[in-house]
Image 1 (spheres, helix red, strand yellow):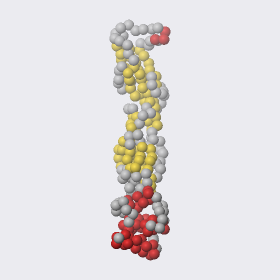
Image 2: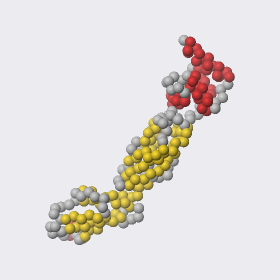
Image 3: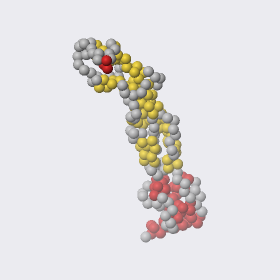
Length: 227
């Protein structure tokens, strides 16, 4: 046997340890029994492969078979960590029970743009939008499949007007590469932090730069265009 909580009965019963043998052409019936609640019979492996819990073998040769049992497949109710727009995200969908080997597939809803689900259950990528993204996923382990819905929250990085303005006018490198990528995703995505990105960020976040800050940003961008 392989796995927890199972048993196999044989008819006729034979005690090989006591030196008992069967005559040729004897039909042996093996029955897999789920002895404990929550146990699943996965099937027989070895010389004969079948999912039936009852196996009949005619003793014309020596057979080697294994009854495979598994516990009930479940998906724990664990929430996913929040992701940050523009920053690398890594999370994992988890399962318990089954055979111990799991294969995940996206079955409904949508992941954040820029994030993908691997068959291992790993979520990875750089989210390109903020919001709450609801999706469902199937996990398969042996003969069992379970489904669950998940919510992945993508938030914006916390930026101050002062830091953004200093970055754009070149007074200091106050923003990280991920924060700059976030602003470019909001804007025109041309790989240059420009006035369009700044205005898109102001509109998306409701930031309120002072007239002096706006004049400084606009003035720098005019100078760059005139060079």
